[in-house]
Image (cartoon, rainbow, N blue to C red):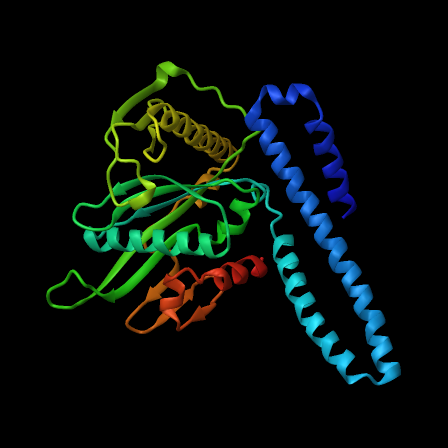
Length: 337
């Protein structure tokens, strides 16, 4: 907590500097991070005080042999245990990128319609999880599938620690089921990959406008209420790296372009970081790549089983998982570290 208090003091000093507000995005990021740390300190102080109070009540209940007071204390201890477990989970978010907001993307693998349908199922699963956990998100882009589902999508998770809380999901997700698209009702295996990019709102990257190709097109696809179906969608290609970003959910072409540029900055920073890592260690960048077949989690619907291959955590309630109940998998992964 002493380290957190020092970090908060630095951020509060930065936020009081008028020059910080010359860069609104950087100022907002500083305020967000300060608010998050302030909330962590307050939570610790609250739990610590509650623990002390319960200790006193416990001694009192023993001395007076008060069964009613003892029952109340047991209930309060159970609530305290839940709070401490959440704090323990947050404490595991200590990797360099964990405090960052993030871009969250899902892409279909080989398998055509099956894989694209699975990608849309994953999008539904994650958006239901975000809504249940009250995690802010915005769908920036959805690429429609050829006959069903989606080829891919990109979401923005603007809150601090979004990257840390969801990095457990990075990797290949494998679906095994009796295919609804197969007239012979055969078992099919499909793959989709989740990838995250931390958003470094305080970092700068030089982008030469001459290196950009900007295309506009009509928004379309399976994004439902998230897609603004006008001629305002924007796709930006960064020619030197081949990185392509697109946005079709904002109300105007200008807003879509601004959001696409924000996505491009985040991806370029990550790209250059990986290049630097590769220069120091030729295998470092390789570790970040997603390889088809090396799945992190399997969803076997006909056997009613979802299993994480890293933690061995599994459940038979496949319906609940596909309806967004993935927190146990996230907790098992973070606490295993």
